[in-house]
Image 1 (cartoon, rainbow, N blue to C red):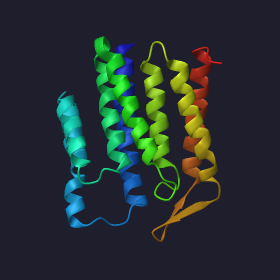
Image 2 (cartoon, helix red, strand yellow):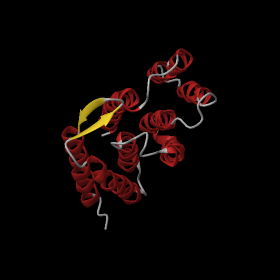
Image 3 (cartoon, rainbow, N blue to C red):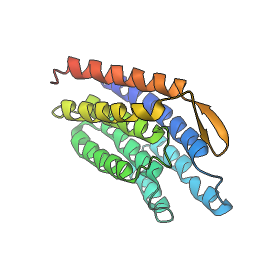
Image 4 (tube, rainbow, N blue to C red):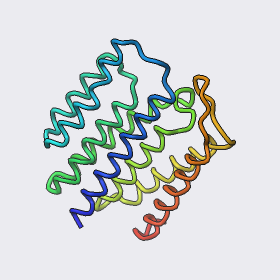
Amino acid sequence: MTKRIVSLLWRATAVVIVIAVIAALAIRSIRTSAQVEDHDFGSKMVKYVKEGRFDEAVQVGLQSLQNQPDDEIVYQQIADVYLIRAGKDAGQRQQWLSKAVFYIEKSLSLNSKDRDAAGVHVLQDARSFETIADLSMDSRCIYYDRAKKLLEGRTPLLQGDHLVLDGKTFPLAPLREENARRLNEVQAKRTKAGCK
């Protein structure tokens, strides 16, 4: 069971990183060269996580926030580090989950429909709450409900055929399908956990 959870966390993290990169490219305008250098923090964080150096990974994320304190992607990535750590360290799981919740909440507080027009970052936050619920022994329903609420709130952002960002057109159907799939999975988990 623990290996399965860790495997799911790694897969979820890979998906989250890919989504974050796509979102960053699609939603943000072209960065200046100084900002591109700062963006390298993501690969450093991934490297440290793979090496089991979780504290260093978090520090890299926190240092990158000194230049851009309102970058919700960084807060999401720090939360991901704590989620992976929670999956590997059952003895201190609740501590790591609590820290993940803190950084997810910070990410959500910075979310803007102007910068996240299709709710890609909201999807990542919902997935993080779902993972917390999967790992939690006593608060599953609370975090499944948080994930469900975020996914339901994202649905109106995905209406229509496409979204135009920075002159580029992106189809909304794949995002709508992913959102519906995630919502169905969260609902099934809520039911299985006996949530009301």
